[in-house]
Amino acid sequence: MVTLAALWTISLSSILSGASLPIFPTVNLDENTNSSSKYSYQEANFSDNNSSFFSHSRYAISLQVYSSTEWLILVNRQPTFVVKDLANAAIAATKLAAIMNAPDFEPRYLQPIEEGDSYVGKYKDETLFTIPKANVVNPSLNLTQWINNLRVAAGVEPLTLVEAQKQMHQLAITGDRIDGLASWYGPYFQGRQTASGETFEQQDFTAAHPSLPFNTYLKVTNLQNGRSVVVRINDRGPYFGDRNLDLSHAAAIALNSDEAGVVPISATVLVSSIN
Image (cartoon, rainbow, N blue to C red; front, side, top):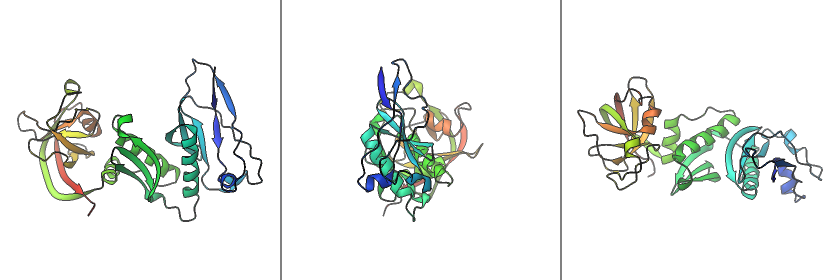
């Protein structure tokens, strides 16, 4: 049998006042049970007089078991992001509760940022969660989803994929544009070395171009449907006909061009927005 805490609703006022921590309700899970399944909501008991704190707060922050080593952070019972181990989850939930219930909270400052080897969810200068690149294939998708979960829970519109990517990589649009055709490549090249020396990962948002410098970012738009994605150049090609770009499989899926194979595109060069 495996024993896990089922759900913990944090009373921020209890923590700040130095009151004792809550007693965790527990649930016994059979070894064959999927530990990521949903659990019924249970509220922890507090010995102080402020245990009704969240009934008067706009945003109630709670924790739920996600896996044997991960906890799901919920805002008003809406899933938002995942944190490893209970101690870190409690810290993240407490910080989030303080930020979101502050009088000057402004949801538009919830932002996705790439920092070194990590993808980070931030509110202004405060880090809410971190996704190490090594832990997830295409962590930019997780980061976009988690930030959008927070934005929706806070009552504002989610970011589009391109908006999130531009914020994440801190990019600005230029007037330089490439018009032409884009194909895509994937499974056959998975795990092989690209011209830049990187290992090709078909689930990343990358592309091959005959001559653009490596690490150039492009906003690519499928002219057949208007869908867009930001890709980073890390390979050379394509070497077939009059094609201008060879997209990764993930980028082709984002453009809904994976079935067509080759589509007309317009690509705008993006540069760093940091002076």
